[in-house]
Image 1 (cartoon, rainbow, N blue to C red):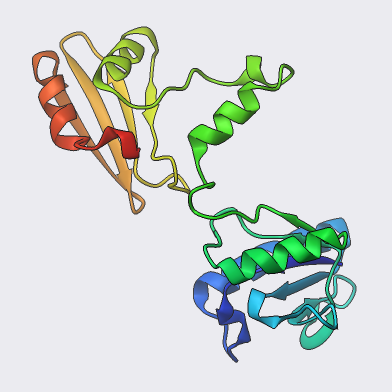
Image 2: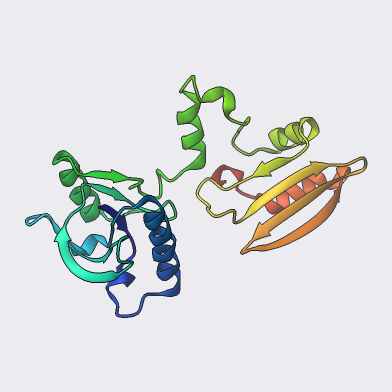
Length: 208
């Protein structure tokens, strides 16, 4: 059995739409790979008993039942979630010392694309496969836009393809597309106005 850590909403009688979609996604994967799942939140874990009150999915029956079960040895927190609670971090630290495995449990500060890139760049087998990546500045943006077909500007902590800029160089202008909340806007920026656009759009580039 694999544990999936979700929001406190799983304790409610009716699952919130976002949580229900996640549960359905993992159920499909569990059925495909023939593994049972245990959906729970941090408040439902008993450190003393090493149990958890959860929604338990059986790939054999397809059923989803609320019950108290032993805490799974392997647990995953979805990549769009993060933990800033000191109480929860202490709980995870104690459980890890007892050979419970938790993947992707991090706080918002650690949830950083650039830090991840730096880490993977340190692994010689992976580094050659990574795209050129820098913190944002006007000089870097223009230099890369002049050298590459497309340049992607992403926030360090955004997810699901949201709030991304794509810069493409043309003969007389740059085409810049922006995706925000699934909506895409496209603008043509004359070359002589690129810096003005950059200053207006990225007032605090060090935060990106």
